Length: 144
Image 1 (cartoon, one colour):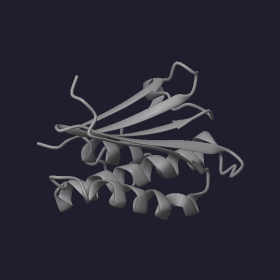
Image 2: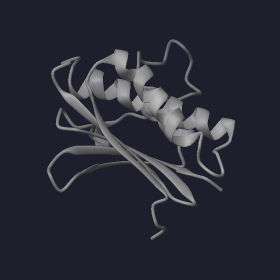
Image 3: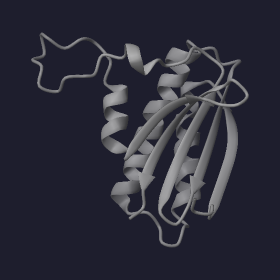
């Protein structure tokens, strides 16, 4: 396993308005790295994390701002991982109907693009349960 070069761990209340704070934290944590991630990689990380954070607020906590969402950024020489952790309703990938980008507008259902977006921006997306019982979503990005 590659040693961590940079690590940030914090929490946010489950409010959509905190998306801008999450974006600012990602930028302030990742831009100063040496080497700094490319603009495209940084854009992908921010957009995928924004989607994941918003989905957690909306679906896991149903907009209950009294709840908290953990955010962790793990940087190694070869990768950047963003971990979102919560204790709300878990996402069950086995029940997820993948978004079909080839479907006509009439065939498409409303919503359902979040996982599709994350899977296309990140190199790997995983959903798991932590040792404490919390639900975790991990976005993994290769730095190479």
